[in-house]
Length: 470
Ligand code: AMP
Image (cartoon, rainbow, N blue to C red; front, side, top):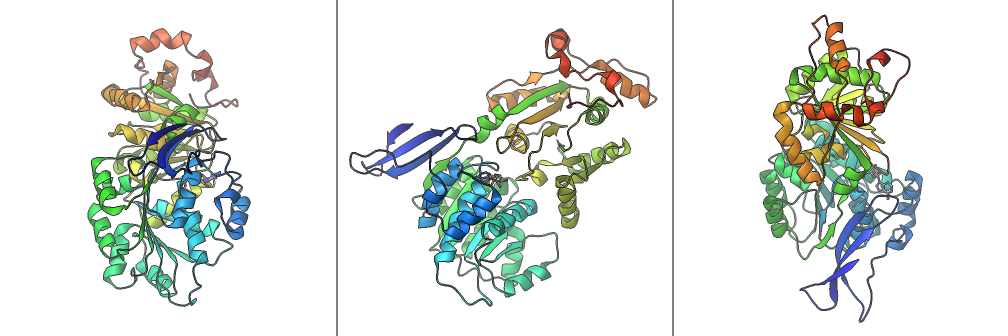
């Protein structure tokens, strides 16, 4: 732990704490007011009880199986409960939803009870995608199961009518995507005049998706005296500008699961010609024993095409992307989570924020344009202390992208040679002449030395013995 002088006063220090919990190492930075001559009040043994949460929330936490707060929860919960603004550098997988949902539910429950009829919302959570809205809404409902606060979801792609009816019945917490929220506001279907807390969740992704004007319009509809909480995985100049205009004397909490994720996830690359990618993936999926695989493509069209092709190869697959109707997206995700389909093919936007329990494998069918997206993609696996695998199929054109990703990760990714029979055999089975697999010289040299037992073995194909992909 290290301390820096806080320019705001001699009794404050910026405490940088490295926690080691059942989760990997996290770093939390926070300004704390020290008692005269005192020591840090940040305590890495802090329990949920010590965070001052009421019995109803502690009960729900126990029922959900959480045993100890994550670093961001320890860092943020007391201050959010006090009403302080927050700037949090955290991404999905750190426990950030509970870090704001628990103290906000606590505060709402402490306020005077309001008539059960039509009541305006007091907490507004803005999120970039419908899937994240559903997840965050679910968390509020899970944590608040022994309280009486009402949460509703507001997002596009579905009929507005049920949302309008739900708003009429009175609500405490609204979790919304910006566009549909503004539609309701324009129609006067929602009263935002009682909002006490605004949460911007995954703010960086909202800006990436071009929501900045919508966000500013929403902010313009809120009371100026309110608490603001901003969560972002990355801090671009745009986010800093937004934070600067929005937050007053915020507590800054930074958890950095990036390297932690990288440590927990086994990263591998296969160098594959573009034309061979689909057959290689298909082959690996059929040989592997992973019950769930999330596959990323760069485009919606590519996701559809790959999903159709894998389905033709006999692999149960669904695609999820922004052109799908909301009901199709919800069904696809539910089927994947319930193990009804083995493979979910997704674009970056659709998969952002997805929380899939113990997802064992993420495949980058194509590397993302933006290297940071690799971190978001693989962040879907290796969560909650579980091991995960990230496999990237990289063609020659993508080598510069691979280098950029390695730079972001701060470590090289192991390139594992593919047994050429994976490609040759597949081509023969498709009635095409077997073509020599593209195996770069360096990989051929590594082939015998590196993890020989990991190589996909053609003799295993279709056999009873199944093993992990790759
Ligand atoms: P989030 O960062 O909010 O997307 O949370 C990621 C996952 O961590 C979710 O599945 C949560 O249920 C889980 N989670 C959140 N807080 C805790 C905790 N204190 N202990 C164990 N799991 C947690």
